[in-house]
Image (cartoon, rainbow, N blue to C red; front, side):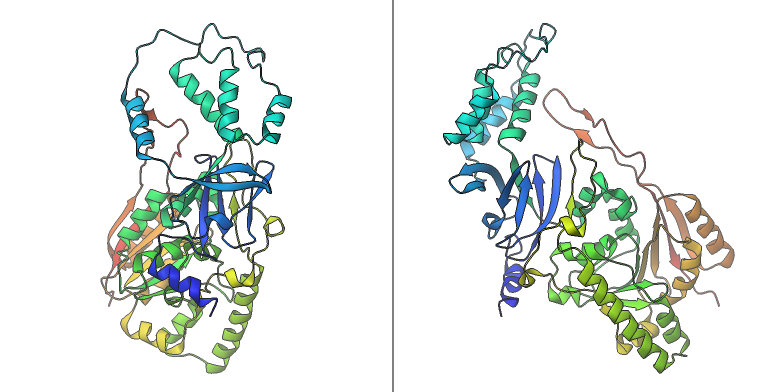
Amino acid sequence: MSQNKPQSDAIQNAKVTWEGCSVLLDINDGDRLVFSRLSAGSTLKIGNKNCSLQPLIGCPFGSLFQVENGKKGPYLSRIIPSTEDNNVQDKEDFQIKEESRDNRAIIDNNQAQNLTGEDIDEMRRQGATGNEIVEALIANSTTFEKKTQFSQEKYRRRKQKKYAPKVLLRRPFARSISEAYFKKYPVRIGFLRVDTLSLLLSMANIAPNSDVLVVDMIGGLLTGAVAERLGGTGFICNTYLGDTPYPMDIVRIFNFSNEICQRILRCSLNDLHSAQNGTCDQKQQLEGGCMLESQSNEQISLSATAEEVQLSSEDGLGLASDNDLSAVSKTCKAPKAGDKASKETIQLWKENGFSSLIIAAPEVDVWSFVKDLLPLLSYSAPFAIYHQYLQPLATCMHNLQVEKMAIGLQISEPWLREYQVLPSRTHPCMQMSATGGYILSGTRIYTG
């Protein structure tokens, strides 16, 4: 009963965290992003301080927390901004001041700060908060008043991140997960950008009550995005070559309910073709099913219960290893997704065909996959294929035209430019990705 209660609460109010749910913790406005599973014993290390994540349980997504020093050590305190503070901040943002100050006369000789490290430690022992330390640093700076308004804001923000770090509680869904992985560890998701993922789902016509055939070799991000759009309707068949299914650990970060997880099924390409041709050997199928189940259980047990993406520009680490992750109690495990498809479901797919095909397999030849998967679709069913490079998709498109297997073929290249929008300093961001990959889309036709 204790395992089902948090899940039922999550279904009733998905905007509030519960014990056992996955969260995306945004530390210091994107400097570091951490995927974690909330429990009474889970902790988060910020700098050299370990803070318990228990205060985050029961709070709505979008809540802001700040690290404070208490009698029992550092802890996360929730910040509730008032309406008056927001109005004052808005007035300051829209008020343009003409000032003649600049930073030319400022000399960086490390002598502008009168407050020493011993003084800061003494303030901490006396119970001073992080904001009080920041204000003391500003008051004891001999060059702060000489700086421009923008330089003062940068100085204040830099000290705020060091002495009073803030943590934003974000809900993990397709967009936030894709952005977090793409920012620091894009190889894990095949360099799939968030705008490319959106276009990929739209071109494949992923809609409720659809039976979608998925080839996901990017950690489960594509499977989770499809399941999120289906919303507990239809089925997802995650197919693979050989006897070992592709890992999809990212699916567990989406906080899917048991109902949605039961809609995510796994079936090898050999089993699908055997059912399609009507020559399925029962003994081989049973042996293959046992092997698949044992391998799937082993992968799930060895996979990490939480993953961390370090997004600091100074830190070159990617995903933390299993040994570096804190232990999570068994009651906080996410529902299992990716069961083996039953014979009845496979027979249903054989009779009706799949309504969509979506592929993200950067490690294999695209055409070798498509020529075997396309006959499994129903006629007039759309398909969309993602690849980081153009040439594999161009070869696949040419072969589809020669074999006359599809119409409406086109290769799309998404283009995205991110802007910084601030008063008197709106401009494109300095560091952007050059390309978001390519998508080959089309519609299957009857070949006779």
